[in-house]
Length: 110
Image (cartoon, rainbow, N blue to C red; front, side, top):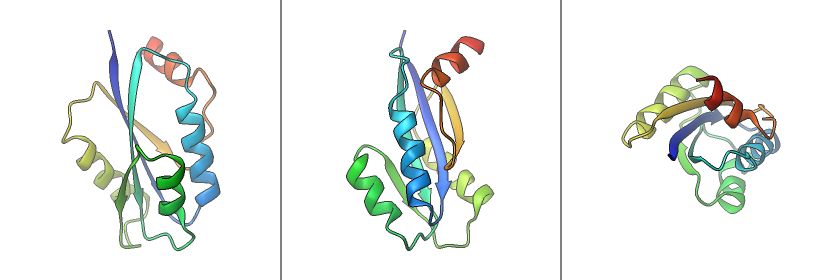
């Protein structure tokens, strides 16, 4: 059975950290899961959105105005993700570096 997961994160001017987080998410070893990623870019001026779009074209980028910060940014990302039918929602900080088996471990634990 395929599990559908929405990964939600928010960021602001931490392009390299955000790209590292997205890379470790993309490298997950659980082939039973389909992960759609939603990133709220809260007004970054360091090229974060462009870098995400280039490296991860399937990521949904939700623009912010620079005044959302973490909690409202996460709420906005969740609102967009909830328009689709997911089994799980994974909230990530953009500075998270996932172990290769993180999703498999989370799914097994749930």
